[in-house]
Structures are given as C-alpha cells and as structure tokens.
Amino acid sequence: MAIQTINPYNNKEVKSFEEFSAETVEQKIAQADQTYQVWKSVPVKERSKLLMNVASILRERKEELAKLITLEMGKLIAQSEAEIDMCASVYEYYAQNAATFLEDKLIEVKDGKAFVRYTPIGIILAVEPWNYPFNQVARVAAPNIMAGNVIMVKHASNVPQCAQAIEEIFRQAGAKEGIYTNLFLSSQKIAKIAEDSRIVGMSLTGSEKAGSSLAEAAGKNLKKSVLELGGSDPFIVLEDADLDKAVQNAVKGRFGNMGQACTSSKRIIVVEEVADKFLEKFKEKLTGLKIGDPMERDTQVGPLSSEEAAKKIEEQVNETVKAGAKVVLGGKRIAREGAFFEPTILTDIKPGMVAYHEEIFGPVASFYKVKDEKEAIALANDSTFGLGGSVFSQNIDRAIEVASQIETGMIFINEHAASRPDLPFGGTKRSGYGRELSELGIEEFVNKKLIRISDK
Image (cartoon, rainbow, N blue to C red; front, side):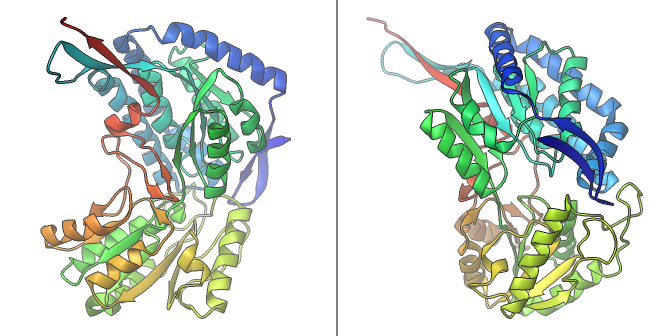
C-alpha cells in the first residue's frame, strides 16, 4: 500500500511512501523497547533539554514546515505557521513544567508516611490525525517523553511528509533512535500491533469509528487508552452578549482551518431576541471571501484536506437540505479544481436531519434560533458528542451557571473553543475519554505508584 501526499489545492499526487513491512515494524518496536530501558532512568532535567531543542528547531524551520502542512492538507499558510508556533509552545511547556508535575505527591495519613510517585510505563502508540499534523503529535509526544516513556506514531496517511519531518526533527534535536518513531502503516495494522506486550498504552485522535476500533484493541489486550474523538460543539449566544464579539468568535471558531477541527463551533445557538441580528452580521462576515491557493497570504478560503472530505460534506449538506433545512449562504462545491467547498450557513435544522446529529467536519455552520436560555441548554445537550463549547454573555455569573449545565469536557466563556498547553483538553460522551495538555496530560500514561512508610 502506497501512502501518498496529494495536494488538495489541485488533487495532484506529489510524493508517495511504501508501507513498512512486518519485519521493519518489529525492528522498530525492538529498538523503541531497548531505548526505553535507558530513557526511563534519564533525569527529567536532561529530558527537558531534548524537548527544548525540538521546540527551537520547529521555530527555526517554521516557514519550511508550514509549507509542508499547507501542501499536504490545504491549511491557509498563516494558520500553518501559527500551528508550528503552537506546537513549539507545547514542547516548551512540558520541558519547563514536567519536573514540577512529576514531583512526589504527599498523602496525609494518621501514622507513618505515604506518597505517590509517578514512574514511566513504556512504549506508547499514538494514532494521529491530519488536521493539525504537527500540533496533535506534540500533545501526546511532549508529556510522555518527559515522563520517561517513548513514542511510536502512526500518522494520518495523507500527511506522510509531515510525519517523516517530525521524526527527523527529533533526530536533529539529539534524540536517540527509538525515543520517537514514525510508522508508515495502514490503520488496519494497528490491532495487530496492539497485541505486542511491549506496547503498553494507546492514544488516538480521530473519528468515532477509529476510536472504537482502537479502544477494542486496547481493551482486548488490557492496555490503557486515551481517545479524543469527534465533536459537535455548541456556541451559545445569550441576549445580553456582546454581539460583535460573538460574531467575530463564531467566524473564527467555525471557519478556522476550514472548519476541520474537533472543537470547531459547529452548532451556533442564539436566543431569538438577538438571533436575526446575529445571523445578518454572521452572513456579512462570510460573504465575498477570497478563494484561492492556500500558499498565498491573501487567500481566505482554501481547500479541504482531500477530495474525499469535500464529497462527504457535499453529501451531508445535500441530505440535510433535502430533509427541509434552508441554505442561507453557500451550500455547494466551488466550481474549480481542488477539494473546495463554499463557506455555508444552514438554518431550520430539525431532529432527524443529518446536520442535527452528525459532525460536519468542514466549513458548514448549523444555525439555531431558540426561545431562551433553557432551550439553548437543552439543544446544546441533545447530542451524542461532548467535547467543547462556548457561552457568550456579559453576565459572567450567568454564563458560568449555563456552562456548568452543558455536557462537555470543556466550556469557554466569551471566546471560541481553543487549545492551549496549560489547559486540559478532552471530552465526554462519544467524544472520547482521558485528557491531553496541562498537568492532566502527563498523568495519563504513568504508573501512579503508592509508596507507604510505616512508623511502627
């Protein structure tokens, strides 16, 4: 099986790689295991030097790496550069804070002493997506490498050059072979690798289907897993919100990365008192955007990640409209080569429609007008997903009260959902389990070992 770079701007193949053989995979697992036996004993301060080197190289090579992202999955070049900066900040964050995070945690006991010590557990297999090809990897690699584990990454098949570049950066930064390993493999091979006793933990960011498959493989082999899956994030605007601020955030939150983010603001829920005014402003912001080459800095609408992705969104929109929804803006493919789809707003969406229940992973906003705050909360929670969300109100106490009732792993008040190194990231319901980033992210794949000292 060939693993290909296909430029979504023109749907032309750029480069291909051969899938690793079973023998090559075995050699790489053996090397990772051998390296782990040494790496687990390296002091945290020494590990941090490696991650700081990685961050430095990312910043030095930002222009080159950003172009690679844009070439392989179509992200606007300025957003690709921003991703590299964010990625570097994740490595820096864990390099600077892991020693504190991994300190022994004392337990108050009536007699003697007790504490929890965090120790590494081995090889972590990560299955990562194409939408943030550098940053998604950093979120699992940085905390685990600092914890003393080693990482093997099966990256998305449409970003092989990004996958290869990350491994090369670790080598350039001074990492011994086996600390970070790239695997050119098909998804079908993951279940077999999960059976290997040297693989002790598994992490996946991706679709519900992929998450279910990995969770099955991990569970069958009694291995810890972390899943960050899809989302259909509610973006609630109450009548006392700063409307201009809310509109600005809705545009960025839904159409950044061409809507290809798990935490994208997919369901715009606005109380009826301000709904029409909000929709008018929202549509105005999205009208007349420049469509073109994502490598050009004045382009505002680029392609989706692949022709397959564009076709799927077209089908979802068509099915929703056929069922009775209305198109306020866009709604169709753009008549040009490449994986393009118009920025779209849908209204009059009802239960039973595709857009009501499914995640639309692209530039399509589902707009809902609701009677009041109570109805907004009920609609927000009427989803199988539970990743992130937003609440807009100038009354912070009220916003917090609403946020506390939303069934998601994350809620942002007066801003769209976003990822930061110091904030825990993860969801509930069918959006997955476990957390990435912050102190919580480094605790997922460590042995929290109790050490008890008797005074008797």
